[in-house]
Image (tube, rainbow, N blue to C red; front, side, top):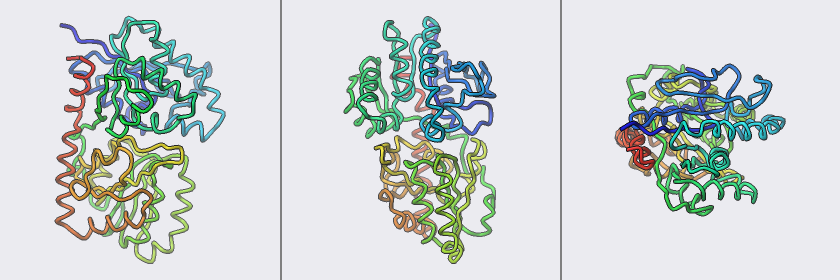
Length: 398
């Protein structure tokens, strides 16, 4: 029996090998290869190939604007952030939506099921492209697509996408609850994204990698946006001596966060601590950073827009690296982190709580070892060998 054909659509995807854009959709696509013939359709970006095979996955990129160099809506960075950084990019949206819908329509007959990431834009685009056909589509909700953009227009778009989908998955139980408040599709499943745990681990550790010279290293990895809460990690450092905080990532709040770190510079110097900004890093660089740090911080918050952390794949990457974790009790994070078992949870926006948790990890070797080992066991539950099969079963690929 031949494999079913799956078309995956997304807006966040590596533009080329070694790109610093998040690669979780690529890893997800790879996890389905044992069960299906997989093609990924994503928007083009300057410098990216129109077609290529990336790590065994067929990638097709479509053009959505006559001037290729202006196709900058989706990278680098998330689409909403790109528009916030330059409002003129919003003028590309009609071209983007129409092109995406048409590209799917052109491919009808070449796939058996479509997997759309994010209810907006992916789910709504799938609805528009397939509403007059019998081709099924599945939507995976990641977080920002459900927890923000909830004015009447967007909410109506979400309802149309969710109500016409063959099935809906969400990456955490909390996110599924919020999704069902918009529309309960009935064919639902909570299945997270995952990681290839074998790609991470203590074997990648390099001593003094951060030039910390005997100090502890606390690592933050994520986009520099409100929901990621990096400001609270920076504020926490004024209470944690002999520690270097490494902020890894880029985004719209970078300038503001650097200003905050500069304001605290003298206080930090008095306790032999500091904050450094490492910028965005490649997948291979991150493997070394996780393994070479002493603790991982994920201080996510509920943003003013209502956006919350959907799941937090970086937690799995840190756990797979046996890195003790401090995270906020926010969004989908408690799905992964159980306080005192595989990490330490603190309240949102609690810099003091973060500092106390870090000091516990740095000063209590028994606790540190317990958190590391249990975190690694958790990571194994989210390995793509497990997650890929769950998605394959849900989409009836096996």
